[in-house]
Amino acid sequence: MLVIPAIDLHGGKCVRLLQGKREKETVYSSNPVEVALKWQSAGAKRLHIIDLDGAFAGRPVNSAIIEKIASQIKIPLQLGGGIRDHQTIQNALELGVSKVILGTAAVEKPELVKEMAALYGEKILVGIDARDGFVAVKGWVEASSKKALDFALKMQAYGVQEIIYTDISRDGTLAGPNLKALKEMAVALKIPVIAAGGVSSLDDLRLLKDLAPFGVRSVITGQALYAGRFSLEEARAVLK
Image (cartoon, rainbow, N blue to C red; front, side, top):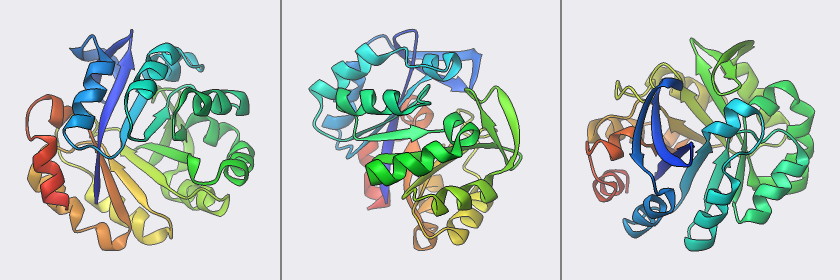
């Protein structure tokens, strides 16, 4: 199982939000490039970058920083936040991003996912951010009427090869991942699931590792790493 460090960009800084709320922000670094290099040096095999400003604005905002990160690291980047049309996807890939995450666009324009998955294959990920089992959009500000599991099955049918599942109520809280929801989704899908939200300890990682046979193949962690709950080296050893 792969552990993927998260870098959330807001106002040009590396931050973490509690349950996605802008008013509950903790700034961890004013130099996101330095943070990315740190995770690469610690052995990360992939980075998860979210343009929070872009998610709220509906268009990319931190592209200059993302381009700097992509130019200085050698490991793959997966990028989300404000990516809602073909041109923006193409621009992100041209910046050096390896995988693009569609969230709000996947909900509002599912046909775009189908087209992009056919065109770019494994470079297209869908991020499903759920609150109480329903998908949330636009930087987690708005709820939809779509059930997360039903939506995941639809995205799989449209050719998506990997799903990121985030339980918003757990994100940034260090309250532990939603193991029940993750297992339910992983069992229902034939494609890998990336777990996100709530990881607080090495014990949480051990519990997630137990879901690997069902299809949970990677875990994104941010708050626990930044708060020093465990090191990336320790996480990698647990999940190896």
